[in-house]
Amino acid sequence: MEDKELIKSQISKLEEKYKDSGQDISSYLDGLLYQRYLTYWDYIHLDTLLSLQVPRTHFPDEEIFIMYHQITELYFKLILHEQKQLVDDKSQNLDFFIEKIRRINSYYTALISSFGIMIKGMEREQFLQYRMALLPASGFQSAQYRMIELYATPMENLVHHSKRNDFSSKNSIEELYENIYWKNGATDKDTGEKTLTLKQFEYRYTPRLIRIAKQVKSSTIYHKFLELSEGQRQNKVLLEVLKMLDVNANVNWPLMHMGSAHRYLGKESGNLDATGGTNWRAYLPPSFQKVVFFPIIYSEEELNDWGKQWVDHIFNPEKMSK
Image (cartoon, rainbow, N blue to C red; front, side, top):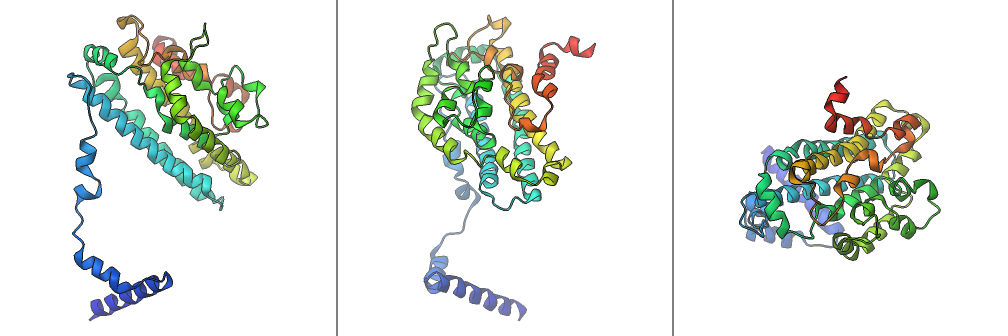
């Protein structure tokens, strides 16, 4: 009897819901009668998902390479999902803020821990051959990663560190974008000529990235932090998760790429260029870029030494052990 009363109550609530929107509940009930039961494979579009790996060569490990990058892009989408909620939030609720940053850190932790698949999970000989069939495509062309940076911090914090003191929020988005740090990684230092990889990326994504930068010009996660009360900004847990995010995004993640590049393209391979011709030696080390999302929460010494100890640990382990 209780079940019948519960069903009546639920139907009554549904009637009110559809009535408020000018809809007829009986039509929706008819839809339920005709609707197929939902399956797991239909819900996540499993067959489509598993058909998205299309290697360009016969080397088996190329499929690993494709799937890993597709998984990475899905994690980037999860990060953006949380960032957009933070940017759109008007409540400035501290618990909400901390929880979103924690989620973002959990996604980065998964990405960083999984990079062993790229570093040790493929045969170098296969990679060095199938990579030539991928030119000029490059992971450098991940637009979602650039969007993550734009949502995290004002664009003046993303200007190449050698020019950063010359720019501020007073500069136009277009000026800041032209001097953004990652462009140096795909530009010939001697001639100033952009690689085809960069030209393709700019043609495809510049309008979208400029639009996003303008949309969040005063509402990045960094701005949201500054808008908190002084007491909230001093919250130890909040500072801890923000620093963790900075280290994850701007130190550990680039260093994992550095480790992968060092394995496949380093000395044993004759110091090869990355796919697409990007200059991985100058572009990937965190201490060379000094990208920091939340600079206000660090001391001047910490900012000057940004990423250095991690680089020493990865590439000079004997120096760190002394």
